[in-house]
Amino acid sequence: MVHTKVDDTFILDATATTASNAKPRRLVKVLATALIGVAAVVGTVFAAGQSETSTTTLTTSIAVGATNGDVSVCYFAGSNNASTILRDFAKIKERFSAVRTFATGHSDLNLIDLAAQAGLKIHAGLSSYDQDQGRRDIQAIVDGLTKHPNTVLSVTANGFIHDGGEWDHEHEPAQRRILADQNSDSTAIGVAKAVIRRLQLAAAVANVTASLPAIAMVQTDQDWLSNSGQGVPGDVDVVAVVIQPYYDATDASTTPIQDLTARWNAIVQAFPNKKIVLAGTGWPTNGPIVNGHYPSFVTAQKFVADALAWFSTGGGGDSPSLFAFQFVDSNRANFGLVDQAKQWKFEFTKPMEKSVPTYLAFANVDAKVVLGVNDLNTVTLLNWNGWTRDSNRMWIQNEDQYYSAAASPNTLGCMGVELLVGSHKPISKSTVHVSKCYFDETQSWSYNVATKQLQHLAYGRNCLTVWPSNEYPTLSTCAVPGSPELLSQQFEQWSM
Image (cartoon, rainbow, N blue to C red; front, side, top):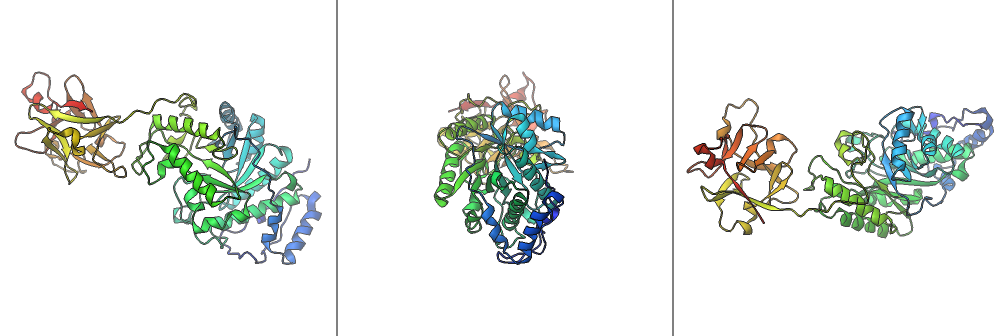
């Protein structure tokens, strides 16, 4: 079997601006001597001035290939070891029928070969901005189609652009990226189109065009619906869309499946004559709070179960993808469906029930007050009468944090104490306030059910204290049982 080696001249310089009807600057070169004749024909066509857009005739319209009962998972190769990746693929095979990768030629490995060996299908990733990676991907895809033509469901180029214009082919951004003028090949979309053309030419030269599957471009749903995204579908067979309810500005934290389906329907309506596939969706089990959306093990499990049920009805297109098996980027590591030991975090078919938030009040019986929040986001002491009708006097617990029920979903405020570095101000004089929720000890508390004390985790020997003639509680050394100071630190936890 002859393997065609593709030269890096198949990849356009990312900085080269090429109009759609311009002549290419380079001749296509092929190193394999068995295909010199074919390469000469392609080179002659280019030298004659045929426009690059004419190569789109090589694009096939083959369906993505998997049935709606098949589901994929996004996979990021965090290792250059074939045995490690094969173990990952074996684990994936337990619950999925395919993987969606963001590169195909990984180091000296071909992920198509490894997927075939594991009995998985693959949506093969095609890098755009990284020329070396793009060359490896094209070579791997051409070789993979030669050896495993039935393994590749689609080839997907990334149409994302990262903040600052820097491209990182390993890590797909989960949030919306600003798209520049699509007519320039130096933009994300332009370069993605160019690398797709390079792949089509390489497939023609290697005589594997008949095996070339559907060509897809992946973007977020917001980018597909933008002016730039509207002009892309004619160049690809499949609109691949990433929809992440966790990053949306709407309050989808309790019903992410509704957010997903609504945004999916908007894409379907925008491109009625195009094949569409969901290229990624998920929910983190931990991490930062975004747009008022809490990361949650329970929500992640329920969202996966809801998404799988939706997939079974045809939602998400052919072989839709969950995000992700195990993400190697620290910013989105908590989206992984497996833990650090690469064991599934939860069962997909038996989600836990979503708990309804419980509204709490912290009442100091001795002073007949409850903890509240004023207009300056300072924790204050308020009369407890009517607390059930006033969100300023209600709190919601999230593990070891308490956030104000009065806060907007987009600006959740957690109760905390933070001293400036180098400050000589005693803790007992420091104001307790609510501020944007972060997962750190400055906003972490432990409620002692036995003593009814609210202890601060960062300042472990200090408890929240009510002072006579002072409307603001502060921290002070935790009183021991039997101490007269204990009454000023006792808060009954009421709920509704």
